[in-house]
Image (cartoon, rainbow, N blue to C red; front, top):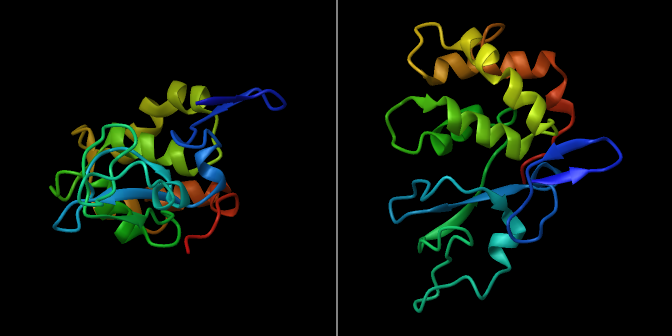
Length: 165
């Protein structure tokens, strides 16, 4: 992550261009079945514009783990398309998202100070993870009034994110 000297905040950065991830649409790589290939999040335009990150067959490679993919897709905002967001964060397709995957994705997409959210994450997560499993179902994310999306909206974070194309 890069340090913003003016605000003294740390934000996640794109591994390709080193700009803050939340400032532009993020992308993820997909496998042959259309599922998310790996945990890495990069700017969508950086993924599309990297000819050097292709395997011998022209398939896009993850710039971090170098796994070959079948394609790229935009990672939608949790506010614009919570269902698709959830499906892409649910890497193992279990119908549950893990705390660390939600945290990493939110830090990539929202203008939040990494250190501040890391310090408060356990108490924030406990507010939604009622059974202490370390995972959330889609309803825990999208439930009106009590879900993670509603919480983030009340915090005003839905107004600070770029719209998904």
